[in-house]
Length: 258
Image (cartoon, rainbow, N blue to C red; front, side, top):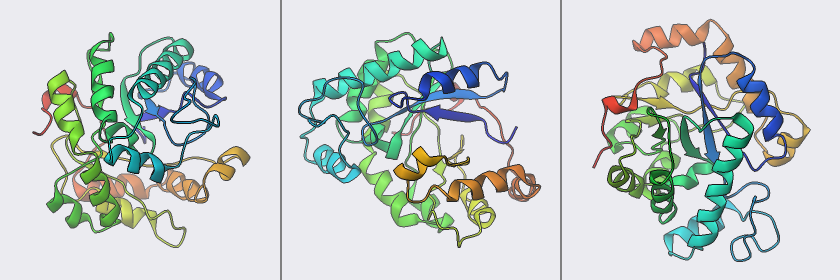
């Protein structure tokens, strides 16, 4: 009862086991696809995008997207493969889709994503994560606002693509972290609840880091801090102080911003 949704990287070797763990747990909550173009190995041949069999860095993907140089057919095929891998392991379609390092909203990628999703059978309550927010809301939260502004700028095209494809979005987004163990995560989380949107979504990264994760993330130790906060009595206290409550809202209640 401390998180409402989680998303999975289906290109990772542990995904089939993790899918069984989640679906067999009986835990309420949405399970989505964390579309990935920057971590690990692709599921499909990508001779132009990933010629050595490993995804490129975030900076390389971001620059390619801004310059319009990403290989459309390779990325479309990889998206289909990651969606298929989700359904094969979980036995159902994802409840939503977001992106590792927000790549699903990058220029070009967001349009291909919308096209592919519009052509697939999806759950009635399916939604797509909008990682952007209004500037006044971002500035009101103060935590990692530079990162939030950059992501909002580069993913701005997702709203138009989603609207054209009839794909609902969240409305309001926060959770950009400094990933520093010196910070009090409870204080930061309270700021994430400031200036909420109509269907506010807060991103978090709780968990226990194993050896594989520690090799992938220099900041993986911060996951334990987030987990400890979410499991503590401070979490419901922070929600209560902000007048907020955790819920899974129907995305059809709000429309994507134009």
